[in-house]
Image (tube, helix red, strand yellow):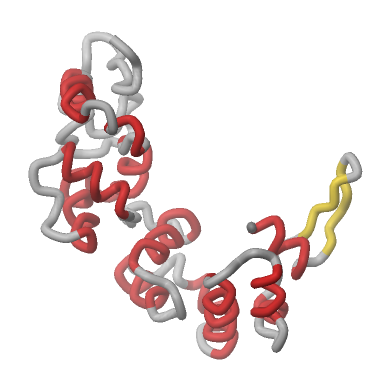
Length: 204
């Protein structure tokens, strides 16, 4: 989808092995009168109006510079500004904060993460919107990345959540109290294992 967006609206950069590459489009390219219709034709569906609406809101409000300045703003402020954009909810805002704005404490929570968290942890917040606070208390200032590497894919728990919990607990994957960026072991493990802790995804 991003590739189609760049091909349709972005500046052509080069060709490698006969494959064209395009830059990500500027705001001005996504605010034109026909931009939404073109996005729908590219298969963006309901997202088309939100892409154009957010582009217009940024162009008329924050501007590109203001958007970039969110990188140095506190997490809560950056999240609040992003959630004010058309079609941007808490999960998308947290994705942007974590992946683009250097907010390592941002924890994107969707229905899959929430469902898995309720199976692996006793009290992951009373609502999906408060699950991020639970993970931040559990894992600390890099909770977003800790959640990203520790949460199994939905299918992993489908057959037997109990088996996963047993393996994860045995290898120190549950209940991480801290994150030590200087450590070469898995961040926040309960104990330094005598041998390398097995991945809970491994059989046996």
